[in-house]
Length: 323
Image 1: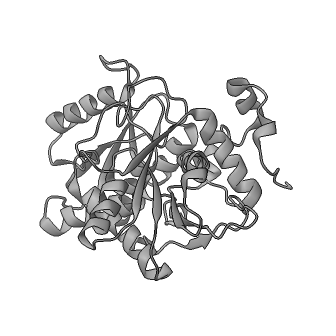
Image 2: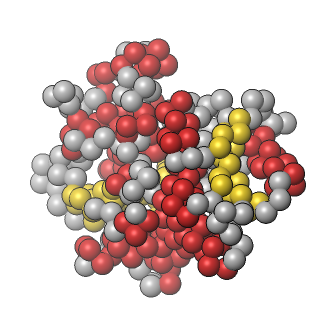
């Protein structure tokens, strides 16, 4: 199963950003088609395999511990299930019931942090709990997605696959930021190969990565702290989007292209819309869509939930899906 990680489809978006007379082309890298459903499969598989090969993780003896509210935890749960390694995922009240069910289906143990940290966010509380577990339990291994260079290194393959498949210059790549693993990995490949690709970081309003920490409703991108994988100049341009932008982007993506994607994918779509007038005609743009939308059926794709949080915004859908 883990051999199926990567080599995800790259599809052209024919309708979503179409304009009469424009020759600009947009492609989507569908990371949600990885086996466990997200771009984080690449990092999870890489980190676990590397630790097993080095003897840091011993199946049947070691305990992998990680803080995650979703995709990275699910990717680790799949990898640990495959190799017979005990896995404890530290989550918080914002973690969806569906994600917890998926984690448990892979055999993961759930450790719930119920109170926010000193800064008022759950991430710092989750990280503190991870450190406690590592101190209490024998033979623990913390993958530490926010600092592990393998997180970034595993994501280099995304850009390698894009360049290999398009066989032409990529002018822009739009990447949602969280741990900064994807953007750092793709950026490393771009710079080492002297590519002219412009990197656009898509951050959340209320994220500490490129802005000021604040309340965020939709998980999947942004962070309450600036990750260690971040560095100055990691992106050529930054676009910050709000929760409503994520919803509108997701709804427009499925309505125009029949791609059911997650919240961070909606953020990426909205970022392209924000910059559309600045992109020179004839450019080739790639959108990295991190995960699929089934995990957001009770939120982003629920008309009741959307109305309860944002009011009546259906007029912002470009095309309503026929379903």
